[in-house]
Image 1 (cartoon, rainbow, N blue to C red):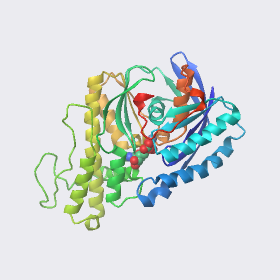
Image 2: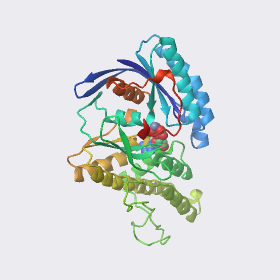
Image 3: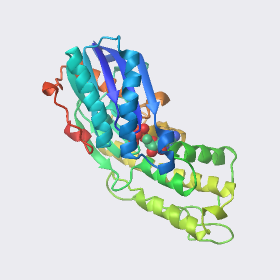
Image 4: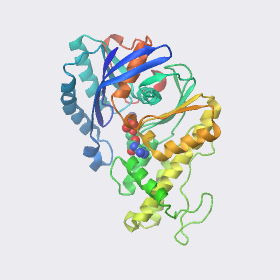
Length: 365
Ligand code: KG4
Ligand code: ZN
């Protein structure tokens, strides 16, 4: 089966053409063509994604990208229907709807988070030999959630952020540190530098009560570390960065070395929370496979810390890490989710009517 997929939920315009086949134990996927245009640079001055600008850019970019697929044939059109920014989602939906009508093929709505989850499970173009249940940690600019898949295509959110998504916290803290949007990769780069050069930390060891003494500062908090659930929270951590910067007289008073130090301490704090709650969620769910997905799943420190957790404590659980090229938003993941569902006999076409839903949950597909 061949699907043309369209992704416009946020600030990436993506179109992919993909062939999928069913195997006894799963599926194979072959990317025939994939095009992606990022608007990140355009949104950078706003420090985040500006919805109407995103919409305008998708409207402009979709026909330009599609020109490369105009001579291709396909059996269905898949499109992200949510979650995401509604004005942006609608551009993809309208484009996909018209295309499906012109070609007389079904239109298949796809949940963006299911796209992140299923595509992260794919290894060497194959989605097979997955032992259920699967626990997924989905970490992006809009989401931070633990999703349990007990049966294929059935999802239960067993933990989530109570406020900011981890990617959002990275982006906001990056902005406080004077780094450009999207801030995740920027903070990560600086934090890596601090680790590689073994730069001395100005933050007191966790738990010590030292504050602003001899150039040492209280460590940043690790919110909700001890709550008896799989929920996380990053807004307090973000505010702690704000206050710590203010205590030091503002960002302009910091040396380059101190900014690097902040980046590492923030990344350490966020990672510790994610690792701790992953341990808890794995114990509670008895998952046999663990996967991470979403833009933040590109983060080296988070990937390595979770890998260490699994090696040390959950040797029997298989860990799947997404290839770096598909962690951010793209249309390949939308094609994979649509193909996996269609090849399993699920009919998502619903008469061609697709409505954008900004806060669509993975639980209600
Ligand atoms: O999944 P995604 O591309 O879009 C959403 O659906 O939100 O995720 C984007 C988020 C941004 O917050 C970005 O800063 C973050 O992923 N991100 C990272 C890294 N690469 C992207 N965060 C931390 N470390 C990274 N290496
Ligand atoms: Zn995403």
